[in-house]
Image 1 (cartoon, rainbow, N blue to C red):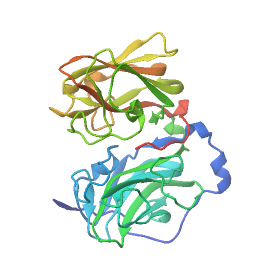
Image 2: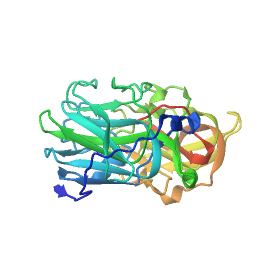
Image 3: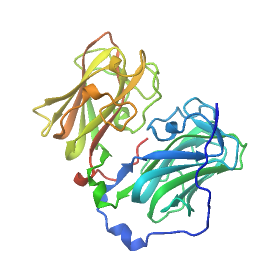
Image 4: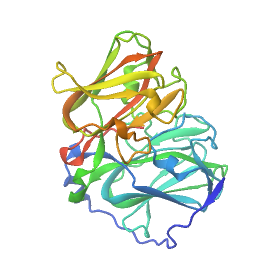
Length: 345
């Protein structure tokens, strides 16, 4: 179904750039994935705008009109994320159709936008279909972009041009630093420093913390998913230091029962949350489940009290097997800081 939504009616050339000296005002450990409060679109496009900020990527090389994408042919169409407050923007991560030009612009007031990054055809790796690209040199999907100073912005806008006029965007994520003191109690994703698996399982355990959440409903043995049959298997995630863990999001295979325990020293563990795959919105396959109230996959019955932890243990306790986990996101409050710069997807 095609949608049309009006947004900002004025587009001016006035720009507002934060002086370079301000980039040193925020500690490096506060680098975070900034969760957009809302997204709005202008022009004619297909599919729900919520797909752009739901944290889920399609598989690379999928066609431009994949069900996981917002897609369009109108060169006047654009999409604007409202971050809810001003932040110091450092990096972006996006998944778009490979053979078009995509421009990321930023604004403080939602009226005056200036280009930040331009992603050209061939910057990615797939050569066809959807491609994931990042402005972060430390990200495996890094696109060789000109180095840019961090900028202060509340609004991020994406537009497309040239190419075959078959444009698509599956996800747009923004990384940087919080500036507002009142934002200190917001939940942010922690970037783990490592993971170790114990027992017999298939695929690299690092897939569980690579930041990439496959589309829901997939099969347990799809690419990007770690799976096993032995109930003695478990995984230990190292957050790098102690955080107050306030929420988690995990994608698991429906039919199993999974537990997440927490520890300060990787010796004594306490139960944090128990997740039954069928508690989510999928009746089969992989299902994303969250304890974060603002997340569309939120399950209120899984709420837990915040816990001080450095290590998290993931394991299955029962079910018809095979067991599978594709991704774990761990949240804390911004006032406690975050791990070093690593933009996930």
